[in-house]
Length: 167
Image (cartoon, rainbow, N blue to C red; front, side):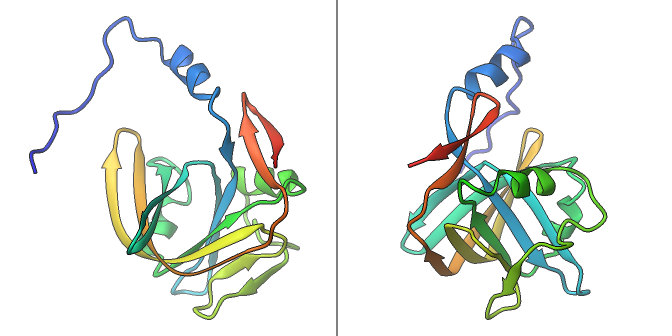
């Protein structure tokens, strides 16, 4: 496979307009959580989650290269993608902001592999890291799904800069 040259916008490309155009696409809201080898917990809100393959079961998510939690997820031996319920906007905001302990007073249950599964999530995907790709200002994480579960409740979405309920 041939590598593509770096993509650079033209001189008249408007990054602010690009961001506004992207906001027209409604996304789900997730929190990726991990128990690190040293016992610390990591978690971050993301809305860049997508399925990749059914066979084998693969999903992806991305994180800004400058994110404070980048080092934690680079060393994580596994992680859980928690799809949030429409009642969990405050939790999404909590995990989106820098904090000493994002997990303080947050309910979760350790998975079979010891990864934190957030209480109240409408779905969760327990993954082992498969690959990572640096693209632009983000890193794309591809995870092999080892277990998943769901509860048929309304999910939390994000559209035009605000949280919405998804049916």
